[in-house]
Image 1 (cartoon, helix red, strand yellow):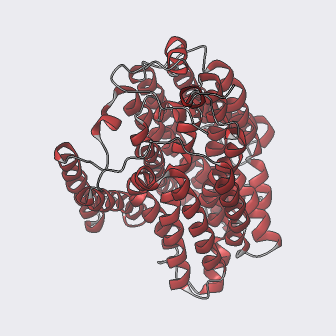
Image 2 (cartoon, rainbow, N blue to C red):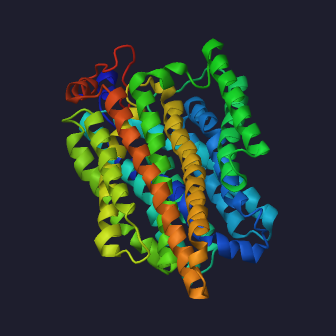
Length: 510
């Protein structure tokens, strides 16, 4: 007896778990790229003759294109189809990576990095929105987002290991070439395996004023924080960028409230639970970027670790994140409200960060850094999983791409803020310490020791701020994220709406 169309539409796609493999592979590639190039940068700078003043643009060109175009990329996914956008984004990212690996000069390198950002802004929101429409049953959704959250959180540390290995034993160009097999395998797998649900696209006309205002506003914001790190917070160009971003983003909100087919429907952002997720996740990323930055410098400059050894030193955090996401988060997601995972998760990470405020020049890795990383990883992994799921929970299918883009936008902006803000705090504390103790350092050996001690003082001063930021993230999650308890999860799984005025995403029809 054949199934009716209605019965068929109630069945999830039997290939959804295979699809998750390729989506996860693509996410890993994007997250790896955020850190892998950092380790290769000194070698690339020397080979290509990039000046000290321009080297930051190898990082900034990627961040500006990626952060500025994410909302547009999410809307393209809703309009053009998530699978198609995902595959095009992957192939474009592979081509841009090949261009970067073959770079013969500064212009070619910076152009390739900007192109990577453009195609990353297409594939990242498409990947997350594909998960949102393929996994709708509560237990399966918890498991799928647990895997995705572990990769999103731990991929940066894996990038440090891979970047260290490739730079130390092969050549910096391989930090670009390594993306190509990732992208090609993920694109081929996605093309043959992924099936989108029928009728979930948003075919309304593209909001051109919204695209222009959001892109320029986000670029100005990300560049403002990047410029603040190198030029200072009160420098004219920095202030101009911040002022421009406020004006542009305010105009964007005004346009979105009035146009018939907005790029970012305000219902996506202003719904209490999703707003709480975006805000708390962005704050957590600020703190995490500070940790990666300062711990990398501490291990390499103060402790004398090689790039590869530094990468392996981050493994406990990766293990903690994978355990937190796939074991703790996944098992509890259908039993407790998401805020009871996010709040305690961020607080556990804050305790881990608090341990690192005790860093000294001769601190023990096993006695201090390892347990701190485990706590950080477990806490972040436990919190990231429900955050990723809640960010797209209850949205209409036609909005899932742009809701996913908001997750990535909060991460990108959080990363830019974290790098600039915490670096500035660390630099100020280091300078103050050197000034206060310079008279006591007479010999070259004493001066070297003073410099190292000043660096550690700077790192710990910034880490104290990261602790506070994580506590605020926990408070926001506990206060604003009030839905998604076990009852709501079951309601969504059975086809009801947990949010009242919004419909759950449909299951796949193939």
